[in-house]
Image (cartoon, rainbow, N blue to C red; front, side):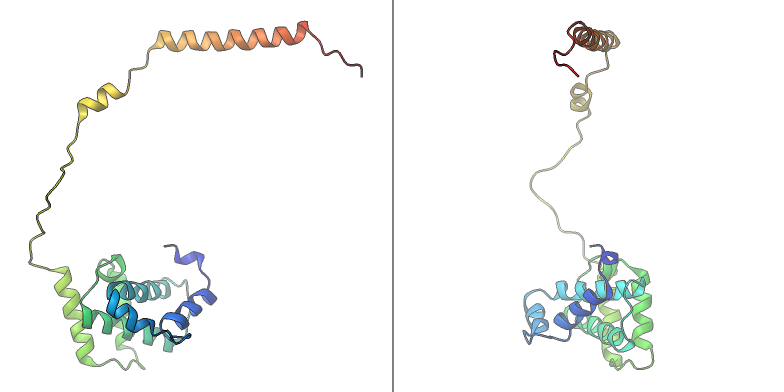
Length: 181
């Protein structure tokens, strides 16, 4: 995604449709039921866009997005896209927004948010065993697939191209056009 391509008006519209539920579709309930991580990612992308200075919404909008994002992570665990888990700058921005004057998020939500995020980042569970096809590096195929450059063949091809071009030019000079100017 390229947030810099989208102007303030488009971000405002996105906020109004998905967060304010402008059309009364109850999208928040839908996303929380079907794919809460996608909704988390959406709020994280909006917050990251604000953090980078690519969208300048009101303080109220920033507080609402920060609170909603923290609540989603607290309720459903961290979805761990790049924005939700791998972005320290966003974590710091979000912590500042949650602690800013005017923020009404409950202390329990903030604590749960930090706990869920920490649990996702420091999981003690081993990675699952992957079964199926295994890729292996085959250098022998690479060596035979790329033929070495043969200087004699290259020189002969170049000579042939130059000769053909010269013949075409000479043929054009020998047979001038048959129309009068």
